[in-house]
Amino acid sequence: MSQIVCQLIIHRNKPVILVQFESNASWNERIRNVAGCRWSKTWKGWVIPDTPENRAKCKLSPGVPQATGGSAVALRESTPAKVDVIVSSQKLPAVKVDQLRISEENKQALKDFLHHLQLKKYSASTIKTYQYEFLQLLYALKQIPAHSLTDKHIKRYMVWCVEQGYKENTLHSRMNALKFYYEQVLRREKVFFEIPRPKKPILLPKVLGESELGKMFKAVHNLKHKAILFTAYSAGLRVSEVVKLKIRDIDSSRMQIRIEQAKGKKDRYVNLSILLLDILRAYLKACEVKPVTYIFEGDVPGQAYSIRSAQLIFHQAKEKAGIVKDVGFHSLRHSFATHMLEKGIDIRYIKDLLGHFSIKTTERYLHVKKESLVNIVSPLDDLWKKGFLE
Image (cartoon, rainbow, N blue to C red; front, side, top):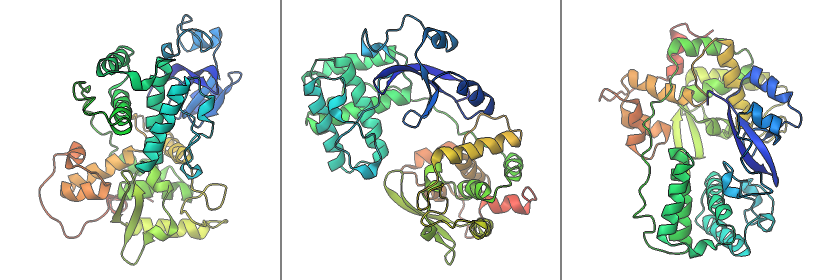
C-alpha cells in the first residue's frame, strides 16, 4: 500500500473513518495529531472520528450516509463480525452475535455459518475472513432472510459488489464465503456454477536485489531485529511463520527449521543457514530476559512477537538503508525465491521450501534452469561471502 486509503466504516457501533497506509514515520506523526485518533488492531489501521472536517481532509464525500441513517450498504465496508461461538484460543473478536444490527433470522444464519466453519476445522484467519465477508451480505439484506435468496439474487448482489469498485481479491473472498454458506451449510448444489469469477490480475513479486538487502541488513544494529530479518530471508518465511517459530523448531543437528501448521495447515522443513544459526545463538546469548517458548517474544514472556512489530522493523530498516521501492516484509520471501531460482535451484524444490500447494504459485518466479543440485546453500550465506554483510 504505497498511498493513503481512507474509507467509512462502522467500528464499535459508531461511524468512523479508517485510514490505512504502510508504516511511515511522517504519516504516523501527522495522524496522531488528529483528535480522537487511535490504532485499530482489528482493522490494522488508524481510526479517526467521522466529522465533516475529517471527511474533507480524507477527500470523502460529505453526502455519504452515516451509520445512524440511510443504508448500511452505502458504507465502504461494515463492522467486522462479532462472534460468540468461536473458542477463545482462536483469538477472534469476543462481542456477542446478538449485539449485531441484523435480523434475528440472519443472526441464527451467522451462528450456523460459524458453527459449520468450526466443525470443518478451518483456521482462525479463514474464519475471520469468511465471517466478515458473510456479514457484508447480512448487513445489506436487513430484514430479508439469507436463506431465502435464489441464485439470481446472489448474482445480482455480486454485480452490485463489482459496481462498488471492490478489488478482485475481495470479490473472490466474498464469493468463497457465500459459496460456503449456500453450498456447505444449506446444502444447495452448484449455487455458484453460473456466477463467473473475476479474473485476478497477474502481479509479479516485488523483489529486493542482493546489494539492497545488504544495505538494509547493515542498517540494523539491534541483534533481535537483525535475527528476525535474517530468519525471514534465509528460509523464505512468511512474517507469521517467523514470529511463531519456537525454540524447539530449530534443529541444529540436522540444520533444519520446522515450520509448524503454517498456511493451509501444513508442516514443512526448510534449511537452516549456518550464518542464521550463528546470529540466533548470538541473539539468544545477549537476551537479558531469555525467551520461554518462542524464539522471538514480546514484552510478555511466553507470548510470540507481534506481526505488526516485525513489519515495523522491516520498514524502519528499509528507510535507514534509503530504499525507495514500494515493498513490505513479504518481499524478503519473494527475494529468497527469486535469488534461489537465479542460482539454478529447481522450482519444484523451491515450491516445497515455500510451502506452496500448487507449482503454479511458484511459477511466478520463473524462468528457472531445470537442474538438480545436491548441495544447496542459503542465499543469506552468499550475501555474507560476497561482503554485503558485516
